Length: 232
Image 1 (cartoon, rainbow, N blue to C red):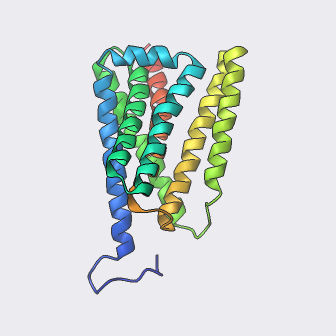
Image 2: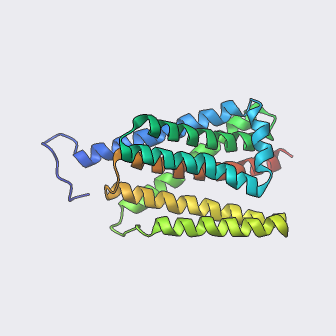
């Protein structure tokens, strides 16, 4: 980052302050959502979520309405300068991810295993995020097209998942891998957008939060499968 100009000797650059602010907001939203996932897993909402996400198509629809709809409301609110609308969008997204996460944790009766799964998932997701950040900021390569690539992964995941739903449930594991890859690719784009100052701080923070939580949810499923196998 040698091309950054400093405001004054000993004063942090404007760009650095912006990145720190984005990271802080994004991390705060992720932390809040992880707590919401754990809290909701002990409520009647969790079995409802498990029922909804037991069907591939209903689960996708719920995700699109809550997480996708929340993201749309949040970005629309930011564009219009309406903080309440942006806040409502973030709240809807928080609920969507909390619903999915609590549904995943619901099948685990042990509170200690739930906490262990969340802890391991947090560490793994953090390492993935750190690796992507180092890769993006460590090169001048443009990742502008990677948002489009993420949509290709999501579309592929939907097609593969639909085939698995009607043909063989095992195929749906590949759909999950494509969705995870899609969120990692989207996270790469969002971090690149921060590097390039493509969006405002709040929009960037929300974009990174949504991508990180997408990675988190899919890693959580994998971690729980491993823990259940080890506990068997």
